[in-house]
View (tube, rainbow, N blue to C red):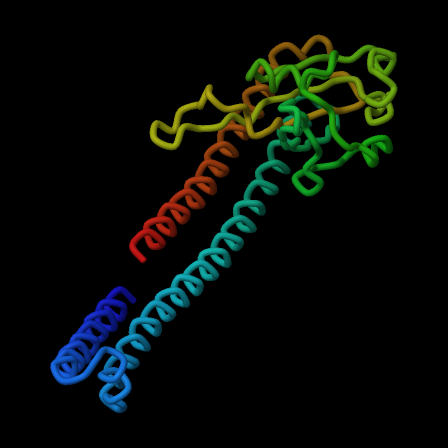
Length: 271
């Protein structure tokens, strides 16, 4: 497409230059307006030159639009495939945690977002979840701020570390009413791990930005007290590995978007 634009620009310059020569010759005999009107068909190179220039720019613009549409389509396909990979991985890790602790469990990813006041909250990813245990109060879950007291996933987000915590039987009494209505009373334990952001250049954890979100495993039965110590550490390792892989996937998607934005900016600048 660059070749088309260059050719159109060169042809336009030649035609306009030809018209200038013809017009200059006319000026030797007539005034400005008379010279312009007397040329008649002699003005054709000027109009053709302008038309070529406009056509070249229009073709370049259309090509950029086609490229952007193609990128969006491919990016959407990539997102969907990465999503399926994460869903499959989460199901496997949830099964590993359940087998290691010898109890059933659920798994869910909570996305972190910032409100207009700059406070971070987490909300459910309605699709990236494995729900083996029915917990009715989760159905109406909206969002919980990460600085809400007694919320394990919020503390894991703030401290940037994986955490395991067993909940007392009356744990819903610890929360404010608007929070308690979204948390199942029968829930007895939580294992949460933040999905940290990665630096685009070093691929290491980026401390300048808050995590993408939190991956949470939870259930209604406590693990066996005798074997739970080592088993919990193993499960924390599973959660870390999943969160690490998810960080890489999200980082790759963000890099793809940034590269496309940079290419689009360069193309717009060159136009």
